[in-house]
Image (cartoon, rainbow, N blue to C red; front, side, top):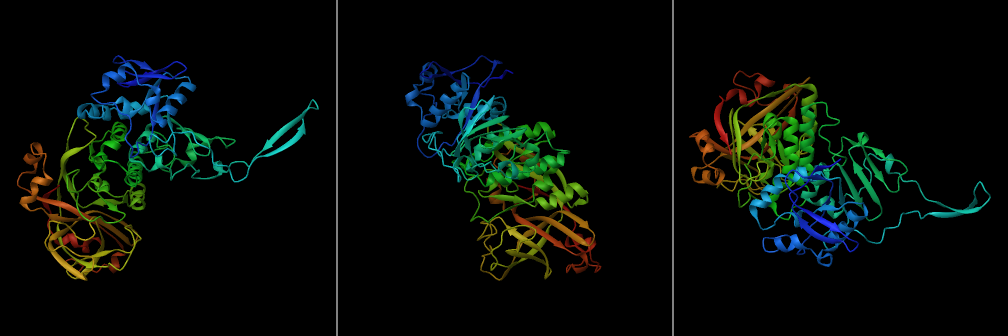
Length: 528
């Protein structure tokens, strides 16, 4: 079935693979193939303002890097005439054109008849085709007779075990699967043809089929895995499960690499736009308005050295850091299945301001206006541990209120709680009290005798630093007004039996009513 065509395409004609850039008429439909590839560090052929008209006339096949040549050949061999390659179909030095086309990335990959990819190609110069890695057990050739008595040769090879595995081998460590942009391209594509280093394999919304397999693998068997097809409108019984899958995507995406870290939000904008339509929700710099409390409880796999030198996202967004992030998915699954989680804050308003034309891409500012308790904390160092954040991990830091240990603290920054604080905590310190740092409780739940709560460590933002965090101005300044402004410093998390709670309220009660937020009146603040 014909689908809407992108703004530009490569047209392939003749046995010599003559190639040129074309601009189909608006609302044109047809069939085309898209390429998913690693750019690599080498300088590659791109469409620029200066060579745009030349590319409309011709792009000599010999000038194409090897990966592009192979993509052109595969497109022609599959019987297609049109090919979409990002570096050639988008003017790479035209900011406005790049933003417009980035906002159409979802359509470009979803409407492609098939996306082709070479997992082993680390750059545009590497190419798809290479000598195959031989299987562990080479085929055995036997002579036999057919029904007519004629001698025939039979080749026997070991049956692939891919269909028996929950996570089939798919060259996960290949250059292709380590790149940030590639993730959404693969997840948005209706079908992907991989030209791998050992075999060709095919992935679609129904199955995964290896050249060496004797039957396809049902996508339903691996639907819960991030490296199966991410089908938001399939295998999902509720919006809560879709949010859960989004958090899995974020976790996988942040472990990938980006050549330009400013692409953090643009590289997921197509997938975010797809989710927004399915969820009927508002996208806020990587989080979702209707599930924002769960979206706020991300943590870093390893704390980073300090804040980014240039603004990229609000401090409460995972996009504000350059490292792999995780979510307490076990707690999240419990929450959506048991529905026993209670919020400890009231969200009054939340918004972000787009930096350019793509409303799902880069942002210039963002804020959350909320009403909650702010509890001054003391931090005890547990720097001798080497564990990573998570509900079962040994904490690096411990939060105390009035001398009582109440929770584990997983900071976003390693050597400083914040570069804004002159009394910042060094990892070697045994303990410290930083009065400008507070615990902001977000959620709590109780199952039997087990109480769980989590929130953020936040710091009051000095007026001198508000401009950096509030670059957008306009509507944000009007709504935020003169309210106190805070930034996120990390995640605070605890799981404990209420009877063992060491921190009681002024009446000496234990349990939920004895948790520290009870003794502190709620106030309205702005989280930047």
